[in-house]
Figure 1 (cartoon, helix red, strand yellow):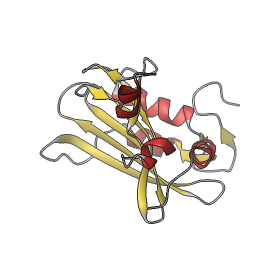
Figure 2 (cartoon, one colour):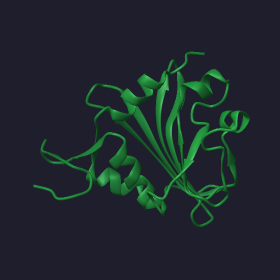
Figure 3 (cartoon, one colour):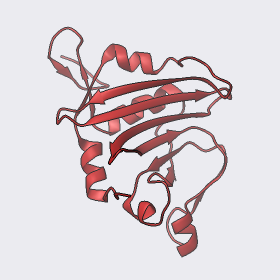
Figure 4 (cartoon, rainbow, N blue to C red):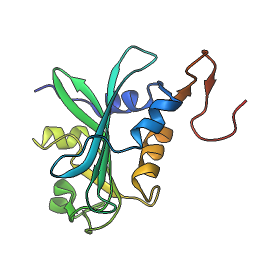
Length: 171
């Protein structure tokens, strides 16, 4: 299994990713429901550097339960670079818990963000096994906005190539 280094993860997160205004709005509407969720939306985005990313927005049936994922395929394996979660069960950061350092755990029903790290991959865990609590978002919709505003996305207009910042004053 090929390990994605922390430097490569940082490069991927900062890679400029254009998103159209209507696609951003589309992500915020839950897709086709299934037995466990209100719906899921998937969007493929090609960065300015030609890298292909996937955004998955999944809203669960219970209020405040959701996952917004930014993923990248690395050696035919999908790596979740960032996962913005709503309220879920308690989470333990296994490496930090074992070493009794850093953010060891997150209580249930706490908004939190999972980050891909090299050290969790080397430990045989899922890349995004490390998580931190957050107050940067408070809903499904605001988690999508947070992910897009924090990890290299910018608005590209549907009709002409003028670029806009994601959230804020526009020319």
